[in-house]
Image 1 (cartoon, rainbow over the protein chains, first blue to last red):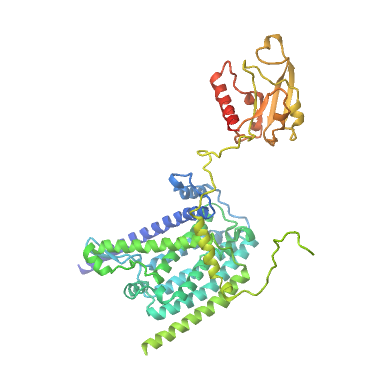
Image 2: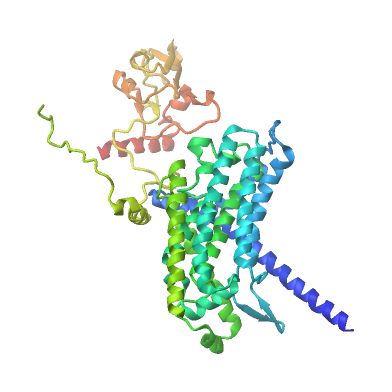
Length: 354
Length: 184
């Protein structure tokens, strides 16, 4: 009898998690889809143009049309390519892009049918380590894609991408250590809760935020760090040999990556689902916990959308770095800065706790 | 040496200051510029719905003219073909029969008259060369086509509608022309 009960609870729990995973994947795919639209629109506006406005009202069906076009294109697998790896590349890029969303707290928790449903797929106590692990996996998507294409341009792009991501991961990790020394926890949920009480981390760690943001740009292969896919130097880089939806997956994974990293930045430095200048516990008494949880989700989403806009904004403002400038910035500027930031944070913490 | 204009500037090459090397202020400045551009007037015109106003001297597609009785003005003298720098115009002349006096104004007419719009540079020299006011350039431009052949316009495509048999169409074509002339 007891085992039956446990099983029932587990089933409901599993269902709840499955629904949550499905929901989050759907949302991130739709957001990624419309980020491509936003990218084209914002790019057009910044260049005094109008952008896509033919497919549907305001061109809102443009991403659907683009996706359909990619689906109907011929699927070409080059003769000399390594076929298994060639197919594995884009799949891996997409999977790693989606995986990070598992540990991000998308909201507090809502009451549904007498159950307390947490809006986070998995509250792992090593959340940030998990994020780093998955982000490092993202290199394989690029590296395998470039290598298996058996093309010199792709290979150069892949090597560039891999070295860039590895170099900037260092500075990224170091900039976060300072943050972690303050929070004392690796769980993203705990970090958000601390920010709800003690103010956002951006106030305490502005330099850390700046370094982290720059590294996020580099990790996402976005301009000014888009060397792996530099069109004018490497003919499109590591996905040069790809066609049809395999290319689509690569391009799409870039946007999913942007969405997820925006979520990570908002969670770590901008209070996650914290509604600014509002006391959540007082508000939930008058509005109900569910409404506040949804409002919190909305607040997180607004922050994410701002960062997505920032990604696009920067892309259409700054030109690309040269390769040596990229390495110079990563190794000689950001890492020492991050180390100094870490040291200062440690000293201040020691001084405050004496 | 004395400079030709007084606009020359002496280029100063000094090492970048700390603020310049920081690069971030420059980035923020650039971002402010791009952000301001988002709200500026768009240079694009939504083409099929919205059309750019043409200048009154715009040289578009050619039209072969008729007189008030609907007779073709062209006498196939070939001056337009000679004047054409792109060699886009070809024609074949024929002699008017006695029964055809209502069709052609003079004794000689163009049996075949073709303009290759892919060759044409729309310079308007044919219009200027014509002694009979038979060819002029309208305000429309050549629409796109799927074949090269489609761009070789024959006489029936170039002729203005007949004012006797097809009065309405002629009025429209003429009206557009008149409106153009008025705009001058």
